[in-house]
Length: 351
Image (tube, rainbow, N blue to C red; front, side, top):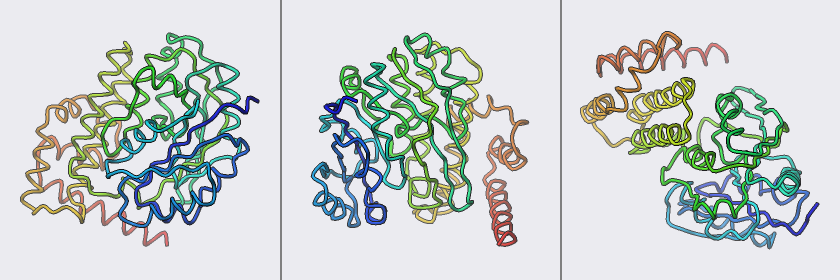
């Protein structure tokens, strides 16, 4: 093991005081590999996250605290990259947990195989449902871009619970810097486009079959639960970015087209059924109707709805699909009322 290799761990922090206090970065500070720098980027938090960061800095001198105006996780990670001094880079989310040898193993693989990217598996944990799923990959060493391209859809894209994340990957920092790779300015879902810009450039990649990361999905406290004014514009930018990635890399695979359009359909649902009716939305009912009709009139929305094979979806999605095609605000509101109440009733019965 080459212990002279430094790893930069970049952690974006926005109103995560609870996690910093409850978990105290214990799974990071107690890593078996010690030559690390931990960059805590306080992204304009409005709680006492900065204080919690500084407290941890007083405990471990490998921690560096950086404060900036709020700009979203991508912006925070970019700031971390700008300050990073390590040979390798890893992005970690404070509400998750990892194996205590995750860094040691990735340093060994990256040093041994001379890779620019490592990918490893994870556990996907939903505490509310007491559900844990394993997401693993076939172990392989990729030695050229054509080989990576040939397995991308089957082994790296169509993965249960997804593989667009930054936290289940290690990056060689010089590779990122040589290609001026940075996250986009979207406030959500920046990871997949960040990785997509890299795949056409990569030649040496190690894919591990080991599960090293514990990814927690909570019902609140993250971007899934926030009102975001430009949420649908973000989904459109991801849709365009993935289509551009597919075209530039020459990935002529219908399954990728289906994936991209299903991603946008999920964005349509989230924007209309969740974001528009969010308790923090300042809009009147009339304004909400205008907002929904505007979403349904978007060129990208029409392309997506025309592409989707609705027969493969649930009855709920089929009914929403028909309402979307008719651009019926009343039907959407009625369906939302019915299905939300059915879900509430189901939870009551289960309890």
